[in-house]
Length: 165
Image (cartoon, rainbow, N blue to C red):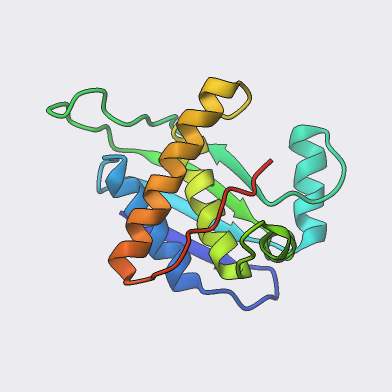
């Protein structure tokens, strides 16, 4: 899996954890190992510009996903996954820090960025949370991936609750 993490935010983040959880999520979703993903970390001003340009919404947001080849997980276990460019995930640590602090369980900016990375991966793979059934499926999968990765890392304690709106 070719994953690039480019931190343009000026904020120190755990880039290794973002890379690792992205790789874990893609493997868990059975995405071809030669597929490519880019994760870009930006400040609030840059995120606000993207949010206005692409969503016509004011203010910075936590995560945005820009799919390229519209790859999807294989429908069947014996199906060969396609190879391609997944696209870009853009993260904003300033928003992630605030969301982590405001979460019911309270968690760190880096834990929120890990959650948002998985959320972004799922959006690139066609998942959405506009409708209640879509939300339940996406957030359930998101929690399972984050919990699985945390278990592999030997992290104990409650997983971050979804804070994505």
